[in-house]
Image (cartoon, rainbow, N blue to C red; front, side, top):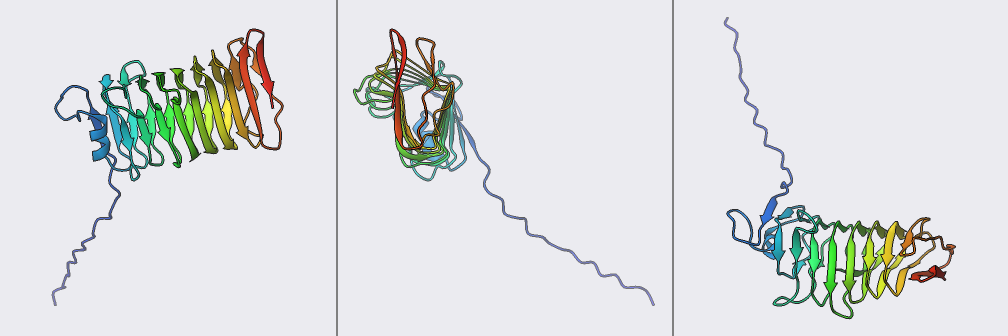
Length: 253
């Protein structure tokens, strides 16, 4: 009796995988395959996408609405990629309404509102920006309350109408920033803030942190005199304010 062979073909359905992040390019002048504006690229993007900005000047007020979590917007350098939110547009250069957004390596100039405005979001990273010349009396370089996990790293803010940085929330990290020629330097409302290695010069009020007493770290405050302030940290909620003067730095609870 001849043996009988049974051939079984197994068909396995491919496993579903999350959509891969898409990288989009933006150029201020028409270029094949690139968006003509940052806002157009944002509108087309979904969570986790990356928007790369070419060198040039973009006259825009960019709004990142909810539903764009993890979006990255990156320029080629703070002196090469510039957002100008002034006339004919008006308003903030960037308004962030999604979690986990990253904005890196670009410049913001002019305008009468904030450079970066955010409120009620988490995990946002602002890194390597240069913000200069915001003329509004209430204009701050980076402004927003009720945020968690906000990281502001190595930004340069100069000649704005109000504070260089004015933020609040939980677990805010403000590190390596330079603020100069502003009425207020850095103001942080936060429980558990980490404020380290920031340089503030030419301001009326240097660095103010309203926290639970764990936020100001040794060598955190560098003023124009070159002195390093080491305020005594309180366990209760206190406000530590430092400002530069002809004789050096001063600290008051």
